[in-house]
Image 1 (tube, one colour):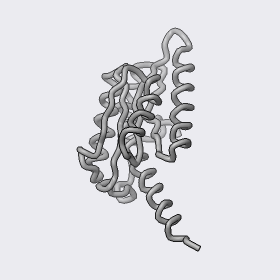
Image 2 (cartoon, one colour; image 1 turned 90 degrees about the vertical axis):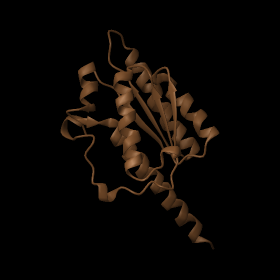
Image 3 (cartoon, one colour; image 1 turned 60 degrees about the vertical axis):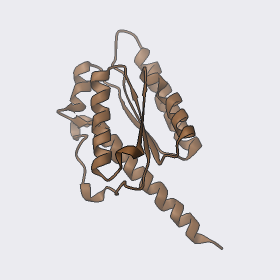
Image 4 (cartoon, helix red, strand yellow; image 1 turned 120 degrees about the vertical axis):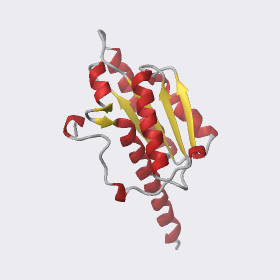
Length: 171
């Protein structure tokens, strides 16, 4: 659903699992930092709001969005995490660089999640303009970082539930 049709920060708090037992990684790009750091703050604050201890959130900063998959892989190898949130912003420019970066990053993050079994959350904005990015980083469409944190909480809980079911079957 297009963010113009839904506020990215709206969710039913009653349906969000408590995160006190979870450990998360957040990898955030410094490129377009006015946008990405606002997204980061939204994600971090949302995780804490839902019970995640601040010391249970590992943060890595990387130069740009293209570096998110590598850093996500690194943090997953060095820490035991329930999910990793990747935050970036690639604004359309005069060339097609955005197409190449966005495709490479989205494919790599999806593959990383499937290969490791650890949820990797795509918190990357791909707007045409800086104003569209601001609208999705705390502006009129909410904060994509909040949405990414809620997704991480739900996916971490889903993995926990499926793991418990698997252990209970026992023939």
